[in-house]
Amino acid sequence: MKKLASLKSIYSFVAVAETGSMTDAAKTLSVSHSAVSQAIKSLEHQLGQPLFQRIGRTVVLNAAGRKYYKQVAPALEQIVEATQQLISEQQSHRLTLNMVNSLAMHWWIPRVHRFNQFAPQLDIRISTLIGSFALEREGVDVAIIHGKSDEWQDYYCELLSEDELVMVASPELVDDHTTPQQLLEKYPAIIAANDRRKYDWKVWCESNNLPVPDSVNNLSFSASIQAVQATIQRLGVFVTHRQFVRDDVSQGLLVEVGSPVLNPHQDFYFACQRDKLKNEHVLTLRNWLRSEFRAA
Image (cartoon, rainbow, N blue to C red):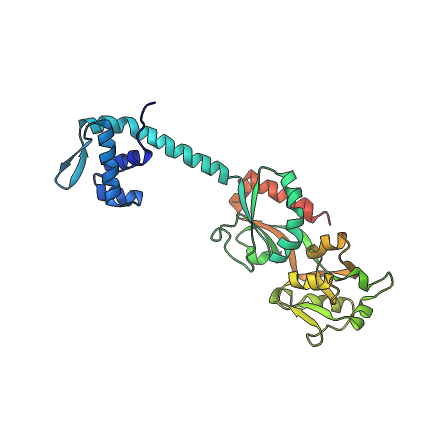
């Protein structure tokens, strides 16, 4: 079997040939000067002849070196291009999708298997940034916005569904005749005490002509995820966003009480940079999100 020159030696040879300096070649390759020097010596030893000559402080190719460079440099470029193309093809199937944590936990995760069946070629990575941010700066390809589209005027925004607020409770706390008022008189109100949820109870209660519960003698949690789990554990009743609890209701872990109320402060939107709409994978994800949100 023929003894092959190492790629490390070839990289070093081409870098020195193109920069005319072992020091500059080392910087280009992010290695030490001695590593480049040893790689060149190893290659010259294997080939049985020198490839460079020194002219002042510059290192230049000799006749053998020039001949060798003309043959190996294009081959090395082909290796680099093939490697980058393979990496690019792998990454082209990967999309980063952002949504609030409650939606990721209670809506996305139960649907991952359905999405994988719909688009098995796509690799979706989830991020859970909140508030408004620059999608491109955060490396986000697509976002499901739970808010208002005027916060995202620099992007393509499409309504996925209106946001409905619902009162939910454990099925063990209610029967067919239980009213929201009766529940609130008997059990604590569970409150998600963060700025994004601060109007939920107010909007729902005002629409149902009921007093808004305060934090005294009720249960407060910092996140909707915690509040949903507390509701499932029969600690009280909760007003939240229907999309957050769709699957808990369908599985019988929770029941809706009373009628849903449209939330004037938030809706669900698909958002991305406008040029992303040329990407077939982004369009595939958008079509799937459309169908899932409208299947409520």
